Image (cartoon, protein in one colour):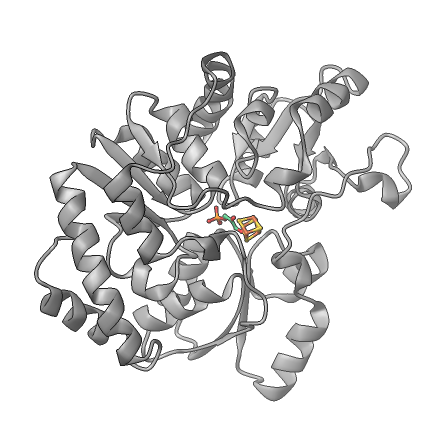
Length: 341
Ligand code: 13P
Ligand code: SF4
């Protein structure tokens, strides 16, 4: 995104977000976005923006937007001096693992994730001891020390592909109980996932890794929407429960969901993921209606604001660091993922 002028920044934002974000808010945000884009050039920084970023930020400052996989690929290849990650901590950490010579900055001090917080490296070591020889596939929504204990990482856009390609009938899938169940259904492989012991199978272990956003969507939400809007096409992220995914018309990563809506001839969609992404898709598809449940937000993604991104660039905060021994091990599992997908 070029710096332009404040007035050009505002014109672009108004063009994209008319009817989605009030003009008074855009006037304030355009000034901050302009200053970020100016500083970004001066400091040779690249800004990566996850699809969940709030609309005014999403459409004004990132050089690249996308899902976890797309942004990880870009982070691995950039030669900018600084990578500013407008996303959550595990994403910025992944960028640092893949590109250690660059300064990687996260605009918020914490910006966690309920999935990443649900598992430790020691948990993975214990699982490996209990199920020796079974490959461990770990969702990218984890921290570096967990990735370091892993055979291969995956994201929502390549999880089933990676699991299919592994030369093993059984796979340990961490830490998202729902994603693991969705992978099991798609691949037909025996997936050992946290929480699966509740299914009554004695070869599985208990775990409670869930996305605090996607676990809240229910089949009831879908049924009530379909009753009110029979033409609505339901699009769900694979972190939703298997029942919700099954009751939906399409499931895929945040970028896959966006592309699906764009390519579809349908005129109305129920978007079962973080609400800001519904705003961003609505802005890109003015002829289509996005039904979204804005009471369900990701508090971690919402920590990233234009104001904090400006501070981040001005002061070079908050810098992401990863212990070198852990980084090298974690990189192996990320490299394997990038090779396999
Ligand atoms: P994507 O990889 O699909 O963007 O998902 C990241 C995420 O955190 C979804 O909640
Ligand atoms: Fe984590 Fe869920 Fe937020 Fe994504 S939406 S960052 S999985 S808590």
